Amino acid sequence: EALQSLHASLSQKVVDGPRKYYRVPEWAESSLPDVWFDACQVWEVLAADLSISPVHMAAAGLVDPSKGIALRFPRFLRIREDKGVEDATNSEQIAQMYKDQACTKTSGGADDDDEY
Image (cartoon, rainbow, N blue to C red; front, side):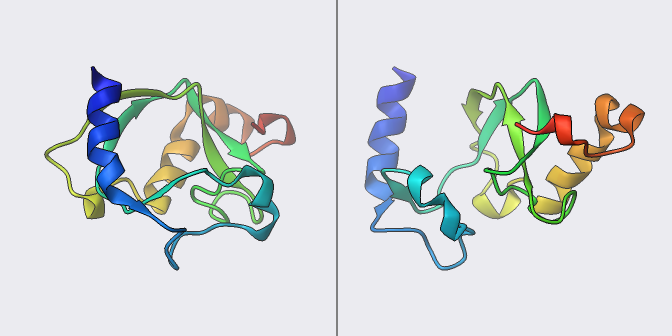
């Protein structure tokens, strides 16, 4: 039921390609999504933790000069009807959440073995 509802609402937001303000690295050509959407929903997700990623670009350059941050084992919880897309978690907040994790506080920050 949830998947059908998401499909119905998102199918109306399909666009031809990424918006100019989407950060898509050139080397990611092989991992591009099949479908692009206009930003229209805020999703609440649960994850085991956040890790440094050479692939994912969330908060890229804020914790590591050339890498971003990824969610480990992400799970969709719900659509946040009370938030607009401008209220979604931003890059600075993601970087701060990464730094605030117990595992990064004890090791002193981003480690090479922390990549996902």
